[in-house]
Image (cartoon, rainbow, N blue to C red; front, side, top):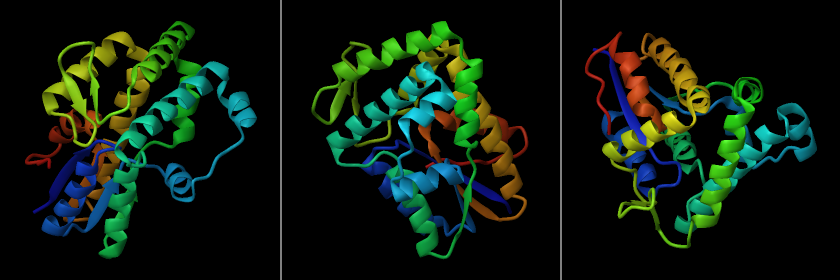
Length: 232
């Protein structure tokens, strides 16, 4: 019987790394699929940094600034909890190789996503995103919890957020940045789901490690083709 186990993660949560190892040990999958493409994996593993001038030329200044600020925020949050952004994905790959398990990079090529930022994202939405990211970077305070939408809710950076929280956050994201949501979520979810469906024809047990924000969208696509898709 074919089996897909989805492991939703936070890219800077220590809990994610533990959960991945626990699932791999329990399920002993034939393959581990991760939310990375080969280029991003190589850059993360080798900590490569490209030329800023080249990036601006290829992506356009507004697009480059969004990427730069998002990366800055992620690093700042990761620094609060002592976890390198993307450590969850690297941990999944390491677990696979330590246990002689196949690894599959299922995400869309980062260059394609960057090109869509440049060509498909309206300037008004780019400016709104830059304003939002700048504001966020200034409101993040030192600590392991950060406030959400100026309410009494907070996020424990060491843990994967609850599903209701993620659902609310994704709803707000989609309302505020519809084009960006399509580029970062819908398009990549479609691409990753197709890769997952292709992999499950080759392997009996597949563990899929993805950011928690992708879980609902990918599961909706997969359930049209398959049933009994658990998550951990």
